Length: 257
Picture (cartoon, rainbow, N blue to C red):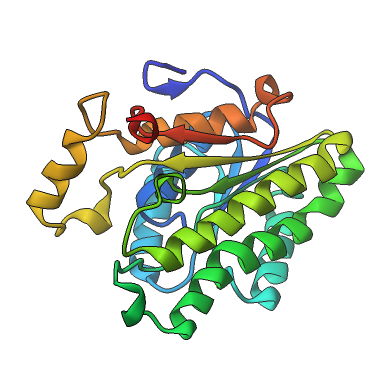
């Protein structure tokens, strides 16, 4: 899917908005979509220093885009960012719904409804509001790509993770239903469900947990962020125009082990 480290699918002439893209998987997806020719709007909510560093790296790579600040669970912020992107780069053709909060694993007795609600806000409210914001332009031009970032934990039913699993399951249902609703408009809606892909926030995870996870991956190795990014570039491309309503697991066959 890549040539000399660069995506082989062209996104030239497209505008992409990637939420939560100052770090982790979102950062790499932004870099790869920029390398594929898209004009990219990177998004962050809190850490301005880190976001500016990421955007500088993005620009140093020769890519075109802007940096937007705003919460993906606040409707006013979403609508404002969508307008800022439209004014600076053009209307959004591709959106990757990636932003995520912390995801502590706890027995159900230790969760609160407030925490459950925070998961629903990020993984159901946010996809709903963002999709609703970008769909008018996509419908008008009869072309669009909405990519939800899910997780293998929903399919695997990981214990002590009920809040996150429930919200990701809801996002998967939203993904499937919306795909059928907008397919006739030339718009595809798909989900990428990564396995455990080590990024910055995993640096302090216990080694024994990492060893246990890796032992269950049939591929026998860790996935890397670029493999998620390359999948996103493919789903955003013309070549994926007949791929819709899918939940693509990128996890070395972990969900079939």
